[in-house]
Image 1: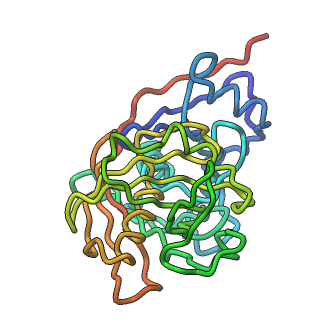
Image 2 (image 1 turned 120 degrees about the vertical axis):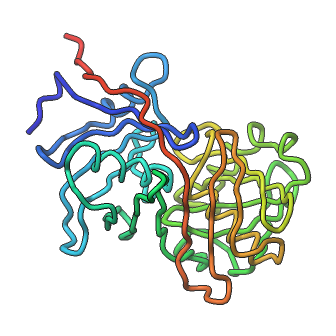
Amino acid sequence: MTGLNSLPFTKMHGLGNDFILLNGFTEPLTLSTELIRKLAHRRLGIGCDQLIVVEKPTNRNADFFYRIYNNDGSEAGQCGNGARCFAIYVSTHGLTPKKKLRLQTLTSVIETKIEDNGDVSVDMGAPIFDPKKVPFTGGAGAIVESIDLLGESVPISVLSMGNPHAVQVVPNILEAPVSTQGSFLETHVRFPKGVNAGYMQVVSKDHIRLRVWERGVDEETMACGTGACAAVVAGIRRGLLNDLVTVETKGGFLSVYWDSSKPDSSVILRGPTVTSFEGVWTQPT
């Protein structure tokens, strides 16, 4: 087992959605919640939205197990931008020669592909609308649900992309109540496992602007891959969007495709990644 007094790491990001990546594939890692929080802390540690560990899969049809921790130490089921960074990490660190990978996550098996231009596309699987599986208590499975929030009834689209999302359509993304409302929606009693709060402005049927208050990160992130997928699917179901959409985030642009003629079809996310730096974290004595 790798000693945690000296821990090699790689810092990466997908449009500003940033990650610490650790190799638990060659030698297994044991990470405490306290250590994850320490590494993820933006002032006292390396800093990240999520920490990602490469592990050996337990599913024989997967190449790797892709383990994701939020910066509060909780474990996440899915992260689209993290999956794209994961694919580049295992490739550049010599863990696989493959350009196409199957990654086992806590909730599913997803597929990634390193494109010829260096972008990474991810088959995120089919969206989940069943309120019990999101989970969302008291939901009817409607395209638009209502939720009581801060004294008003708010229309949201609820679905899971391996993690729960509540998407709102707003007229102006710059005036969206992300910082004032996001944390209340994240911890709303009707979402027993919390929720990612998405705010979408429709620019055209092929272009949206998006901001996301991310569950377990306790703040707005510069980009959210599963949030982009959830927003596009919600917009398509509401008749606002076409099947292929450019998603404009604070950190840059993602592409999302969903074949709306087949509701059980996979959502495809595509975009760039950046390796920021590498280093070795040393445990203070």
